[in-house]
Image 1 (cartoon, rainbow, N blue to C red):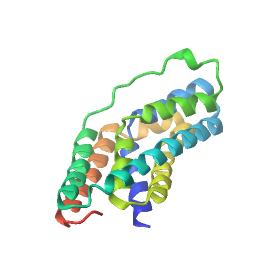
Image 2: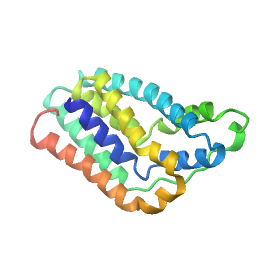
Image 3: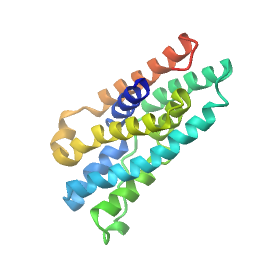
Length: 188
């Protein structure tokens, strides 16, 4: 259960203020089909994070030494520091306009997650816990927790949550997870 809860918390907090929330806002403004967009987010995240968690478990078998613990702990800290750098607001091109909200949301979310902080976090969580199913469920739930309210509440929610504060809290979660991993001298 620790893998599940840590994965949910890590991704939910990391996603606040992330470009995927801006993408959610863009999609609801463009299509106004919330359930189709949520389904697209779910499918894209599930596929992306299942592959990422599996890759993390595979990598984790090579990182069970003391050096591996330092690599994983240091990587969490590095992602935390990366979170301090704001995302650029990139508007998806209109080349997807001819397709439905579900397909567009699925494709754009899958592409947006490639190389993103949460994908890297999912790899690290998979390596850390060695439980790809629990990590995938947790990170997918975390992604939904952060993005579904944006889809349903849109711009009003974006005015309430200060992105800078959210980024700082997310950075602190990653950095503290890395420090805990290093100070406990064990993989979480």
